[in-house]
Image (tube, rainbow, N blue to C red; front, side, top):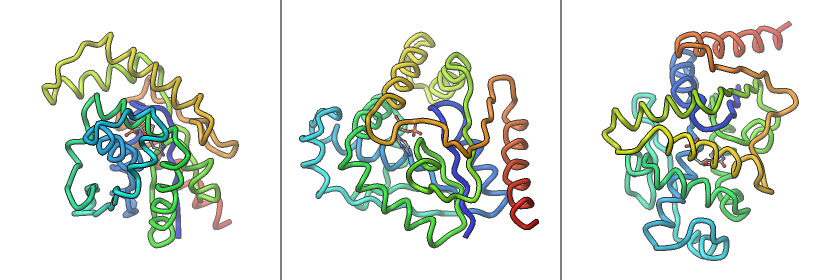
Length: 225
Ligand code: DC
């Protein structure tokens, strides 16, 4: 099985790029952030503070998550309910970052992610795929861009969806989330030693996709030789 790990901070374009590249290479695209977001959504619905480890850990036995792929598009189900859209709000982004710091949450999601990679050729995006989830991935890419560029992209996305916010708020959220994601004790966001670094600040989406595709093809080529 071939596995491609794409890690990096939020808003670097990981999911858009990963989805497109996975589609063209016929790999299963796995957006692991959706799993953390679903746990965050569940905590919010239950009135638990996402950063409260004990409160969140207590809820986990009630959480059942599954991913289904329909025409190459991933849908995520929380206790049988399709929450693919409900998890894309700023509140859930924050809650996901909160719950993702708890070891109990990471342990629960680790096996879900690994079993998908055992059964399929996958292109998985997240924060710790190359470092923790799939340390033996065939190819590892660390995708990043400046905080301003990432905030700009996310702000546009919210505007298109009619979610009211300001650029300043989005930038602050991006910076706060970067800090929290890279400073947590367990599985922090960091580049794996053997990952290829790709900075997309000055690249269009098409250029980024092409660069990612090329890194993957080069790695596969290198393996055969
Ligand atoms: O990629 P995203 O924005 O959907 O991720 C939401 C949150 O989940 C993010 O703040 C960090 C966390 N996350 C993680 O800790 N590990 C992953 N593999 C994916 C996401």
